[in-house]
Image (cartoon, rainbow, N blue to C red):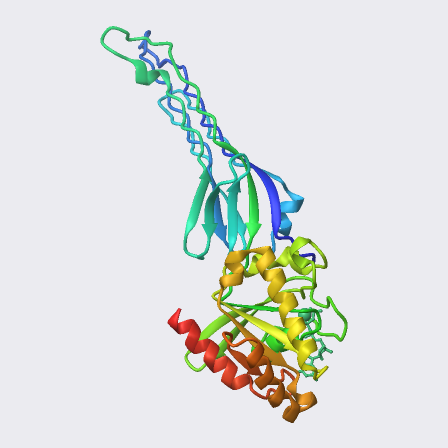
Length: 332
Ligand SMILES: Nc1nc2c(ncn2[C@@H]2O[C@H](COP(=O)(O)OP(=O)(O)OP(=O)(O)O)[C@@H](O)[C@H]2O)c(=O)[nH]1
Ligand SMILES: [Mg+2]
């Protein structure tokens, strides 16, 4: 299944039913009064978050969603039935944007809330409503109102506490699979990850959600590689973990790699660049002694940033890092 995080759809709420024109006809009552009932309300369109969904794929297949119309009123003062509302299920983290104005209409961030986006039309009035002392046989009725119609863009930005960042092959997917039950594809070639993966990390009594995205390369902020398309998924995280492959064991090469990612972040979005970020030197199982020295020198290159030294394979240093993330997430 492909990962779809954008879709453009048309929403049409139901029209209200028309009011009815009718007069009572019964035996022995030659001139019965007006008894046309009102029309029912048109169905509204409502968004709701659904736990089992992770992409907007369904909205690529169906781009037009129309709610049912209300029923027309009938004689004998029978009101038309209200139409049922149409519920559209989306993954949590979906934003709904008005395509004409570009304004965010709503942001679906909880499973409890529902959001009515297009309101069904009111039913029209039957002629019974127009009876008065001066007009005992009104022939007037009104039609049901049209339902609201709207063109919207859906945009999914995954909701996570922690986002993983790094060059392809840094070990981001290995890291998420070592700390959570997420099972992403892992391989020794770049761009193994093609869509964001989420993992829930349970630590003592708290838990946090981590998002793994495809690796970034130089020029990512202007569209190179795959990572750019996915950077927006990090826009709402509280903490970025920048994973760095230290297997080259070369201080200069490693700090150049770190700067490459920093530059892309800054070019992409200054707000994302200002998000709290820790550097995580990964693959220290290759040479633990050398990795300790490397950590010291990298610290001198990046004095303002917190730096960790771990191995996602041997799990060295992972516990301390996970504890610090938990504590930090609780404070935020
Ligand atoms: N020795 C060692 N190898 C590691 C470690 N972590 C990851 N690797 C290896 O590095 C390679 C890349 O790992 P991935 O987890 O797929 O890297 P990624 O950052 O998710 O890569 P992309 O999805 O392509 O961006 C794999 O061959 C992993 O086995 C580690 O701590 N030590
Ligand atoms: Mg990966």
